[in-house]
Amino acid sequence: MVNSLDLAGVPDPALRASFELCDRVHAAADPETHHLVRTYLPPSKHRYFHALHAYFAATEDIADDCFTDWAAETVVEVETGRGEHPLRQAFAHTVRTRRLDVAVLGEFLETIRRDRETPLRCATFDDLRGFLRGAGGAPARLTLTLLEPVRPAEHEMSLLGEVFRLLDVCRDHGHDLRTGRHYLPDEPIDAVVRQAGLLVDQGAGVVDLVHPSSRRFLAMAVEGARRGLDELAAVVFPHPPADGVRAPHRTFSGTSR
Image (cartoon, rainbow, N blue to C red):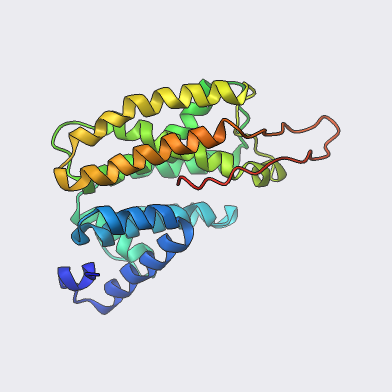
């Protein structure tokens, strides 16, 4: 398999090490999307996708009391192009060299910050959409530039990002309940799946809005979103019991990620 760093001739040892770290972090955090990137995208794009996915995963794992510094340091690094952090160096390089929208990155960081400060509780799917747009749609829009859109596609890409974030929410439901977060709406799960399915239907058009070299990758992503929603429809998720004792539940695997 072609090494994208060799292909690009990345000479800086520290930057090369950062990209290699991001590759490993992406593979560990989200092996399915890592496989899709490696299988369906040109090698020249691999390192950039690994850098973005690794950064998003690392940001989610940052402790609450460290998040403010993490976010602030990220902003400085993408603005100056200088950074010493072993993972963020590749991310900052990607944002600057690929001219990704820093405002969209800010939307993602602000969404995660608000979520950490005030645990979310949603009555309806519409209530959840604001979180999904910032935490899932914004990262998806950042990756869109790497897919070389041939026509405006931000809206469609954002919708797909929302659905994948919803699948993440479902996968982590048991853990989130233990930390005081209850993202899933109070609506029946079949209603949530139906509404999310409409987002996939609208977002699927993005496949035709990007460069031909990126279309197979996005087609597989759309298929994965539909498969994940099909699985989700069969799962019973508990709501926090009134007595505070957690009820047993079947865990959603999230294998479509």
